[in-house]
Image (tube, rainbow, N blue to C red; front, top):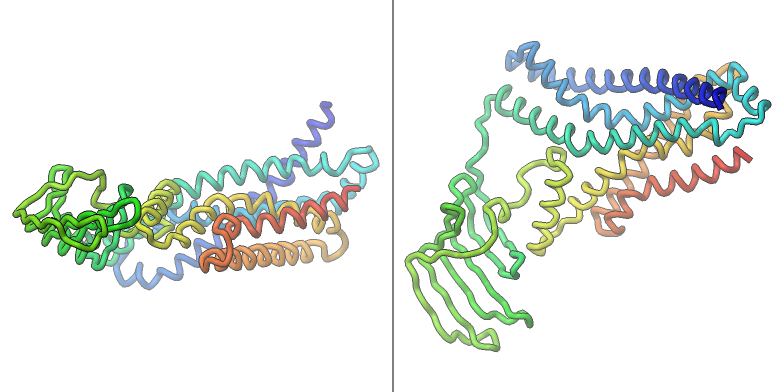
Length: 365
């Protein structure tokens, strides 16, 4: 048992060194690319060294997330290349050690990396994107915070079934103009209609101004009564932000923010397909590291000979490229509505796992 534990520690160490070096390498590539992409902006706006350092540091979690799959695959390829080159794989087989046991620590590390990726996706990355956006737009470009945003032509369906048609909405003042509220019965016949020139959110309550309220007969067509009010409170559990579409890029939203926006659009009978795909991919992409392992192990086992390292690099590039192409294909199918949003987000992982299991068990027989 002690010998097996020593072997596990040895394998973990071999993988960790290669994985860490690959992760640092790919993160440096992302950092250099972002630095030169923004260099003219930094120079033209006299950005300080501290500003540049903070800006790049906030983007580090996103670079780590994007680098994890290819770094895991690189760590696997190069650690296995060294073990094969020194005939250590052959020695393990001759000692009666099953290859499935040999690769178990790799899968466990891959699982831990995937859990870490989930954490990055939900907290650090959205916060980093939001802060860098503010640094770039407000601090660097000296743009004023765009708080006075006016939305036009809003249609919103509340959880109670009321349909709001809003001409314009000033989000800074929390004032809506040209508001129509339609209330229907269970058979979708119009029962009541409220029209207001203005609707304002004051003291956690909506107040209608210059109001016309019409009641309809059971057929939903004939007006039975019509009343006028200079001011009328509207009791409903709807907050100002519920009426407007997401004002933040999805990259700046946490998982709970995305879920909230999806529910809001769904309740308003508005399309939410793209947000659903983005939400499900928040959970599927972090598992790319452990998924590519399944497909990478059969290739890694055969790495030996004079050009083993070059072939290893080729395998890493090929498998990574194949994964990202399939992932983009699945995303497009999901956003276009040709594939279930959950399935489109996990399609690539499913394909890789099936192929990987088949090759892995075929190899380890």
